[in-house]
Length: 324
Ligand code: CP3
Image (tube, rainbow, N blue to C red; front, top):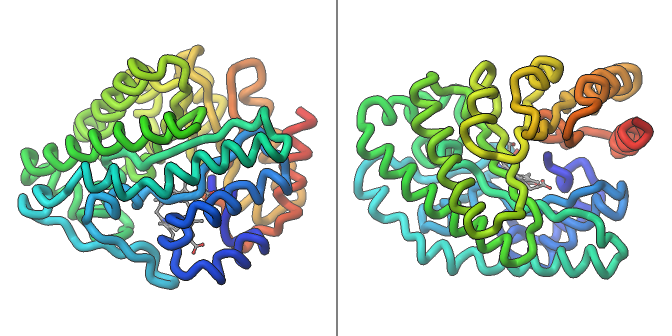
């Protein structure tokens, strides 16, 4: 979760000279460099492509900007005209620089002696991307999105279908460019009722997984249905993902009991424990390591690293996980 980013001085330096955040995401030389920076520093087992889940709406022609201190700002999508304007061929052309970044990172990892480091490509899930498009940015509860899903189910389903197809195209292109695993970020899955969760999270995710698996049988797919709570088990069983990422609130002991044994679990250190460091970091990390011992697992944070995190705390975390 956010390997690159504002907690690293070497990232901040490139970011300061890159212009805006979208320029950084679409300049392959710079995006590849910031993807590699944390690997050089910490030798993680996997590198995650530097980009953003909102590059899909950007590519579809919906518009996007990142306002300083405000987060992402998009036009609010509210009607059929907004959905009809989304253009998948346009997106497939617009993401060319991101695919070039994938190629450069894969080559860079090998050139720098990180042959064994897995390159993770990613996309937002259709539902979470739809959330940002309907609200026009972040929100605490994504009420307008849920209202559209109930009030105009035909329109909302059409939006989800278009985003599902765009996500399939985009992830397939990342895999062809050199991504060796892909991850779907469903940051707002947890705001949905069980029935909407099945319709707009599980079903589109299952379709993405099935379509990618038909084309690329050996590519592992990780799903992150954040705050899914009791729906995590159903998500893990019904979507076909190879791994589920747990958010910070998930009890990893319970997850090992309810997630099918062939599905790996990932997570879920609280980014605030990493920021705090010291005993909190050590004991929270050891609790997770003990919970997942003996089954397929990927150690990660439960959500994005915060900019104030001291880089030495990340070094300590790597030491703890490597020793396990
Ligand atoms: O190394 C990496 O960081 C991987 C690349 C990555 C980014 N965003 C880079 C980024 C990934 C995987 C994401 C995912 C993402 N982006 C999600 C899903 C995961 C999650 O956090 O729930 C979401 C919801 C977004 C949308 C988004 N992008 C938000 C809400 C913000 C924060 C804006 C702010 O000002 O705080 C971003 C910006 C963003 N994406 C940054 C990075 C490194 C910070 C931008 C900067 O340096 O100015």
